[in-house]
Image (cartoon, rainbow, N blue to C red; front, side):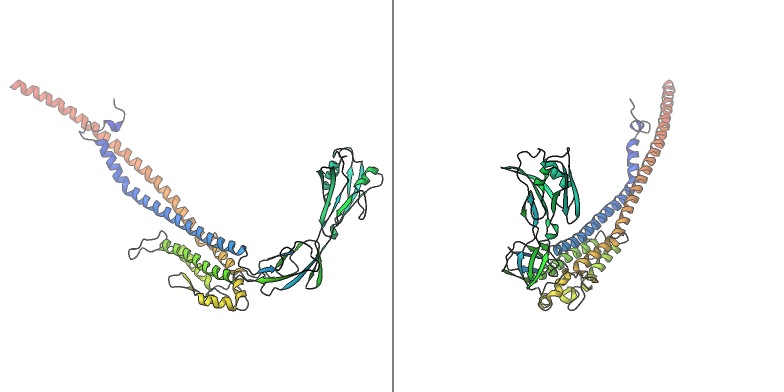
Length: 464
């Protein structure tokens, strides 16, 4: 039984026309397929390479940013007794000459009140209104039949949003109301029943000196003596006493003086410069491989001749000569021994770097810790590298432009493949029609030939 047109081909012609059609179709399609495949391979390699370069630049900028953010490259404040005073550095400040003495006379505390114990926190406490007075103003705390309990009173105080917090604390003696305010004298508060309130509510009162509740702790300001000068703050953590230094008071120690100083991380700064050059050279090697011209027997790079690679090289190469800071002392990497070689890679002249670190340690630190003072335009190395990354990544930048072009080219290739497939199918269909018609005609001719041969044989046999 004939299952298809092509399966019956060749019966009339006497040869395998089905295979011939397949061979002709493949011969017509082959060169086009090879050209498109080569374009797909090249496009895919370019997309992969530009993605790797983009990721490497992102990683370079992010790694440097993370290193700087870690604070290990900044001069760090030191304390002679961390159990009394803790110190840490703020970015953008120079602490090279930091020297101070602090005496912690008193730490800041928050007022806390505690009521007497009750057996059942859901039992009635009395109805009426309590006036809660804090630094924010006066607030009405209303107790009625819906919230007449210790739990209800705590919730009503919290709902007033007056700057204090209330909770019901349970222990072996029962439950009691605990109210806590903020640190500092200005956060002290009172809680007094309004006229007409149930007398039982007086058990939860405090007028500032006495009441039904017990003052477990008074609101106090922190008091420190900085080089003998008394300073008050309503918190134990503050950053407005020593420029660039965050101070954290741990405990009061009247009469005991804590010395604050500074330690510059010279070794870490030196290593950071070396690490920057090494990371830069890794990126430069990737650019070399991506844009290799394939001369002298070398393997050609996927992005050879690309203007994007040239633009990336140009912007990265400019970093060593870019001013990273203002003021006296070295301003560029080139001035501290970071040299650009003929092949585009960086080399660090460690003798020049060591001399610069010895003579201008503060200037080199500011490469990584630029000033944040008002009016300062210093970007530092991290800011300059991030700016290069952002420029390349910008919608009109080198990376974005080539990525857009490659994506558009990929769509064009897909379109060309679809067109090739349609033309190949159409060509094959024409071959099938033509060979089918030929096969039919040849079969007809053979049938006629066979008939004539039979007739001739009959005639010639008769003559025998």
